[in-house]
Figure 1 (cartoon, rainbow, N blue to C red):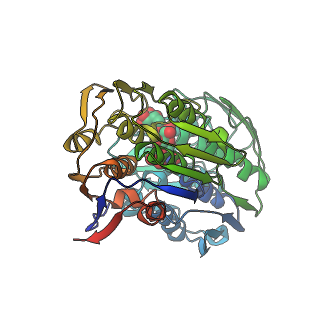
Figure 2: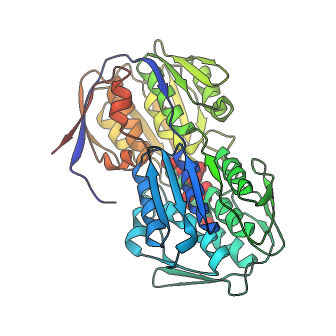
Length: 422
Ligand code: EPZ
């Protein structure tokens, strides 16, 4: 990722108040944008957030020869003119999710060449399960000199695939590959995230025959071609969750709109266990933080367990809890990069393997800290808003990948965040 010279100056101590509309989901938009390549026509995706990761995906589609047009939060993709089937290393290194075009391109054209995606610094993030499934469908996968070449000259065949772990990306790539395969594919131990269900809904609106998304078994009956469609992505449950923790850590009263409350269940349960008042409406959630949270234990799990993408944000909250919390990260092997930065702000955290023991302290102090990845950066914004004085947060290009002008939306609620170029 290219370093920007931008930083946030954050003055803590103010409480937030008001209502905020949650954006469309980054992690639903990325696979769905990749899925537009399955169709030789014009597809419109609506309510897509303006994020660096989305721009990266648009650059990949354009590089492949698709025509991509943006109108506000709507993106139109015409994949009829796709010629190149090779994705440059520069593009692949920018964002791991670029690998989500693998299934679509292989299914529609029978050939893809791409370099290994940039491994995030939250873990090695291999693609062995993506390849295992595609090989079961008849693809020939070669890995050499850091490049992946996938070929299926006579098309993909339906297959029975069992995923060793319920990988979100592997489930998504295999759904898209199977949509145009000959015959029926069954994915067992599939990921059950809401973004998988949204991808199924999008693909079926193009004429695919998929069912079971949201369960651990997804059945895909291949069809010969897919047709243009329009689709509005689901709300971003992680952006919503980050606001909810912001309300708790700054002892504020915030109402979120454009949410699907069921997608927030694991977080609502945890916040209530920590003594935070959460009121769930039809399409809104209100969070009223008051006083120090109680210590709670967290174990990240595949959906519908507690989401790994909310682990850093919850840790920021629990650094101020009454008591000691135990946080276990089971999804990624290196997702505690925010710990040394929180310690610089006065947090008392002890790491033992994939477990963090967080002893609550009465307050945090401002410091010079650095974001190392997207959600770690969000956690540091939350901690800085709760700290008693000023914080300088570096590495904010990580935050811009997944949060649209985070300072604008939080300042509208009463936060004091200034973006400066150094
Ligand atoms: C998706 O990443 C999300 N990204 C991540 O969100 C999220 O943290 C993750 O799912 C888990 O929920 C997008 O949707 C764009 P995985 P993905 O494949 O698909 C291992 C954010 O902050 N694995 O479910 O890459 C892998 O190493 C991002 O928005 C294999 O071993 O995650 C990891 O330990 C961060 N082999 C575990 O599975 C494989 O072939 C889960 O990874 C694939 C994955």
